[in-house]
Image 1 (cartoon, rainbow, N blue to C red):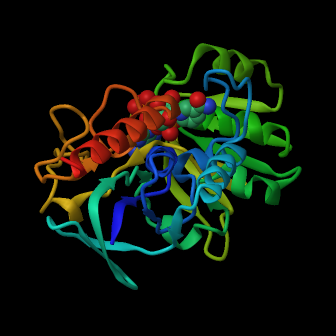
Image 2 (cartoon, rainbow, N blue to C red):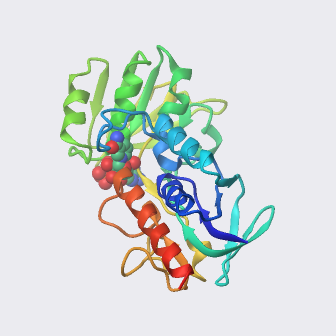
Length: 298
Ligand code: NAP
């Protein structure tokens, strides 16, 4: 029996583990992929208080090492079901907890194009920091207008010969400082009001077809890689027996912590919230853990 089972080892889940472990609780953290979650994809974090600059990888590794040193049990398993009695079923095992925190985050949004799945790993990528190095001195494109896309374009501009930044509007969501840096880079070509209509290639990505917002003016751009950075989507439908979700799949909670089920809580990007950032994810994780600990002993 665990005091706390945490589903998801992103910043929210790992911070929840940190707080529970420091309160001397027995903690299991279950993660389907690799620890770090979406922040692992961030090439550079510059807005985390008191840390001037850190890569998403280093941040994730530091936090993981911190909770490992405190004795967390970490298992790479896929959670299939959470029951209201706090039983958690994975692809491998069944675990019993006194409390459960759902910190499931979100996954990279796909463009939904015909060859997208086939070409993933063959020129199409959702992680510039993971795959960027394969494209030294090559021509690459990044799609998106948020902090991830602009960060990716800047990161790749130091590796690739040329970077196209393709965005569907002419206004960016990314912060002004990053936009300024983007515009100053000589090997980045910014293409706004453009949509990627086709991914061309069979064995690998050869080119992309972009169209303007009116769906006119097809242009083929020869690229070695396309980095898709168009935001994230939650995947919470398997938890609707214990927690409410909205029409976009985000957990709904009046106070941002509790679900409709006693001793099952939510934290991080997976929930409805105003701001999805590292700072708010770790805040959620710490609050959920403290509330869970308090309520499990009541
Ligand atoms: P985001 O801010 O949601 O931006 C997604 C971008 O993709 C938007 O520009 C959006 O265009 C575009 N987009 C969405 N769907 C699309 C589609 N189907 N086709 C084409 N374009 C599409 O996502 P994000 O950049 O991943 O960032 C997520 C959160 O993490 C944000 O709060 C961000 O600030 C934060 N973050 C922080 C850092 C950092 O601090 N270093 C790094 C990365 C991310 P529209 O603008 O037209 O909707």
